[in-house]
Structures are given as C-alpha cells and as structure tokens.
Image (cartoon, rainbow, N blue to C red):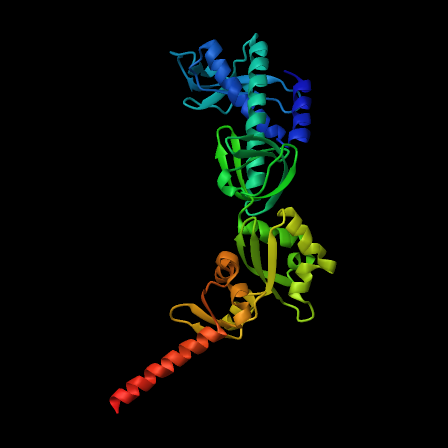
Length: 362
C-alpha cells in the first residue's frame, strides 16, 4: 500500500463520514490477523500503517535476554537496535519483522476490511441518526408491501410500517410520499430496523408542531392529544401569551394550517379545544361541539358528571360514543353525560323518594 491508499481513505471520509483514523485502525487489526494466518506467527506483534505514506510495518515484541532460547519471543541484548540503547535485560522492545511479500496479502486484507467497516460504520451512523429521531416525523417513499407490512424508503434507510400501525382506511401505493412517526429504532445484524406509525397520537402532535410556528416557538403549548386514527382526533392547546389565540393559531388563516394536517391524515377530523386548568372547564371544552349546561366533578372517583341540553345529547355523546370517548381520553376523566330532562327526571324521582320516606316517618 502507498499514499494512494491514504488518499482513497480520505475520499471515503468525505463521502461516507467515516474517519480515516477509524479505517486505519480497523485495517491494522485485520492485517495483524492476516499476518498471523499467513506466516504462522504466534509471537506478540503490532502492525503500523504510516499515516502519510501508507507504508506498512510489522513489529514483534521481544524480551531482551543474554541468551536467546526462542527467537520468536526473545532477542539478545547485543542485537537490540541502537535507538533502544536504554533497553535493559528483561525489558520488552519492538523489532521490525515485516515480510518482503506481505504487500499483496496486506492489500487484499485491507480491501476486505475497509469494505466491511464502511458497511458497519454506515449502519452505525444510520442507527445513531434515526435513534435520535425517535418520537419525530420522517418522510419517505413507499417502496413495497409484503404480507401487509409496508416498507418505506427514507433515503439512507428503510422503515417498516407494520399492520398494527397502519390506518385501516388508508391505501398504500408504491411511489407515494408518506409522513410517519418513528416509534422505535432497533439495532440488528443487518442494520438498523426503524419502526414507524401512522396511528400514534404523537404523529398529530408533531404535525401541529411543524405546521404551527407558535407551537414550535413555545408560545402555544399542545397539552394533550386523543386520537381514533383515520376517524377523529381531539387536541387541547394553551397559549402562554394572552394576546395569542391558541385555537386560532392552530387553525391558521382561512383554516390553512389545520387543513394541511387533515390532508396529510387523509381526511381525519380534528377538534381543537382550549385547555383549562379547571377540570370543569376542560371537560366542558373537550365535549365540543356540544355545549354543556353544567359539569360536576367527583375528585375521589375521577368522574365528571355533565348536563347538556336535550337537543345536544347525541352531539355530546357522538356517533357510537366517539365524542365522549375522545373527551375522556383527552382530559383523563370518566365522563357521565345526561340531558337536562334526564337530570330533572332524576331529581323528581329523588324528591318523590324523599317524600315517601318522610311520610313513612310521620
């Protein structure tokens, strides 16, 4: 090997981001293995590649002795190189033992190790890159589908969208661009395995952070997300600045911001509600578009008892209970919804029961 080898490693460093020093160290290690294999050497050796010229030198570590009994492990004091004049009996010195025909073997070993290290280092870099993006959004192109698994080309890596992380109503066509949420990155022998999701609530949260500058800047805070993927989501937002409307910021001019997210989620409806520190206000807001008349809070059982106008009962509950279910997930409270007439009937029944009890007592 020569200076051209060093120059080639420098090009690899520029293109792949793998340091020259790392490749040289790996090559030295591989050359040591090749040296022992091809020359049957059991002695303690070290291989050094000169960093500027690429010249290879093999050094054997030998103990300085008066009388040599094993040439592989020992050297006579009189044969010690002049540069090691301070070496005394019993000391260990390095002696160059580079074979004359080592160049061809070295070149072959170097090529193999460099290619292997490039692959491994690239895998390592990709793993570290995507590990840091867990909980973030990545954009890729759908490449293929195998046994309901969708494989997405991210450029330097491939992501797996498992059936459990897919929205049932979405179709995945080869060549389509798609945004997904990175839920986990695993290190495997074949490289990093990147697991992504289209159903995770974090996808909605990150889309709003990308689309709404006020959230990214920290002026508006996205407090909670509840989601039924492909159908409907509710998000609770709060403004740290009283002059900034949290809901208006998320909706955007003419609804452009929220519409961009709805389009990305293929029509999934999104309710944006105002977060409130008061559980009563928060629960009332979460049941939007219904407008409760009253909210009672049972702190012990973590239940919110809500009264709504008769004509809004079905609206508050939602289709198949979806609105109430999402509101409960968003707020963390169990929600018991009654209409005004149901509450009146309940009160009248309670009053009648009280009257009967009082009459009995009399």
